[in-house]
Image (cartoon, rainbow, N blue to C red; front, side, top):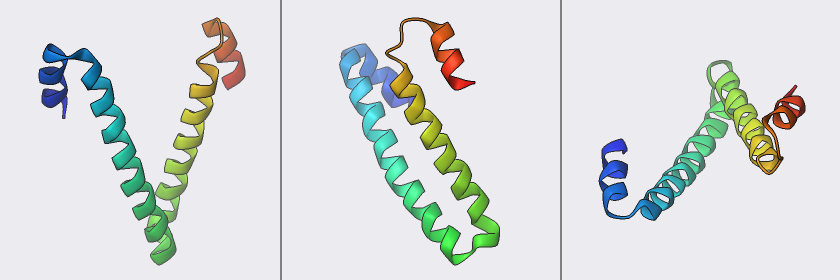
Amino acid sequence: MQQAESEVAKKDPANVTKLKKAAIKKLNANIVGYMNTMAKVDPDTCKTTANTIAELKDKNKELVKLCCLKSDEEVDAKLI
C-alpha cells in the first residue's frame, strides 16, 4: 500500500488522500464487523480485542473533532 501511495503521489498528490481514505474505510468496515461478530461467537478470545478497537475508534473520533482547535495545548487539555 505504501508503494502504491508513493507512486500515486508522484503523479497526483490529491489521489493519495483519496486512496488512503478509501483503504481506511474498507478496513474499518471489514475489521470492525468481523471483530464484533467474533466477539459474539468466541467472547473469551475476541471480546477484548473488539473492545480495544471500539475504544480506539472513539478516541480517533474525538481527536478529529478537536483538530479544529487553535493550539496544541487546548488539544492536550481536552484529551486529559
